[in-house]
Length: 112
Length: 113
Image 1: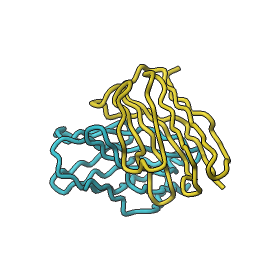
Image 2 (image 1 turned 180 degrees about the vertical axis):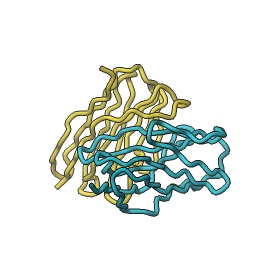
Image 3 (image 1 turned 90 degrees about the vertical axis):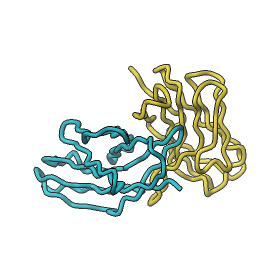
């Protein structure tokens, strides 16, 4: 069965430091997509970054990068130079075909 | 402005009273989906639609119905709501099944008493 695991329910990071949010996934498929969403306290879901299973290079979008290790089935999100506005819930998700599954999320707190 | 809209944003209802949550997108997207978000469980997919008149079950379809009569609209129907359907509901869309980025609506917070 497909599964997404985010083992860190909550994390703290000092402003301006980098932080890594963990995500592991379980699938027997060869073709799939991995992505991260941010949910601030206002509730909306904001797309951050996408990695395709056949992409050889790690995806990057501004301060966000995805550390994709296919053999280990991990897709960790790295946020560089954390800002106070990064405090939010972060969800890792996997899309295979028509279906999408999400992890339980990691709540990130950025300290001033 | 390209967007996914949901109505209502907040709803309190009683057990057994049929309700519909509407979802509409103005981006001509083929793929649309409904999710529910519960604490500690993340988002779980209820139903999805690949195109007009084509829908299928997600991981938690029990107690829900959907329809896709027009490309832009994808309503979620609760024929007989129960308290365990109290949740935050999101509608999402993407251009097609190959495009992995989904655009989410603002969410509908439903309470069933």
